[in-house]
Image 1 (cartoon, rainbow, N blue to C red):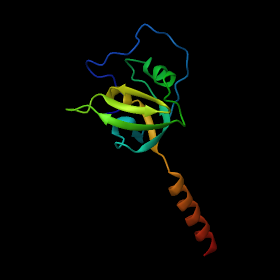
Image 2 (image 1 turned 90 degrees about the vertical axis):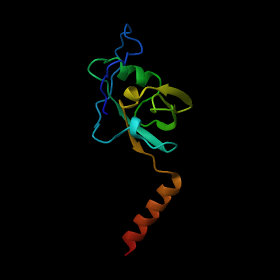
Image 3 (image 1 turned 60 degrees about the vertical axis):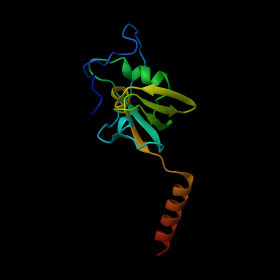
Image 4 (image 1 turned 120 degrees about the horizontal axis):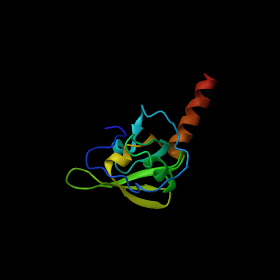
Amino acid sequence: MGCTLGKGDIPPFPEQETDLHTSESDFSGMTLDRAAMGETFIVTGVSAPEGAPEWGPWLEEIGFVSGEKVRLMAKAFPGGDPVVVRVGQSTFALRLAEAACIAVTPAVSSAEAGLLDHMAVEGRKS
């Protein structure tokens, strides 16, 4: 889908001007609209569609900043739009077009991190 403004998508606050910086991240990876339900991800960046440049700063203002944990909690039925996401300690409903503007990477749990550390140490011993 990508971070594009589709027909019928209306920016949340079209009259609002903001000077917040929107991160320029690599969006060739996964975006929140394609995230697996219930898994934890880390926000790696936010972009905005050409037709709604205010989306990037707005998403950052409500908590979608690099390094923050995010989880897809639910999808509307039918069609899956909007989605319910939890970022930090807040829960929001986002349209898929908005979720597509949030780049994420899977979070590694502490158990997985410990296993990876153990494997790295064992690899150095051989």
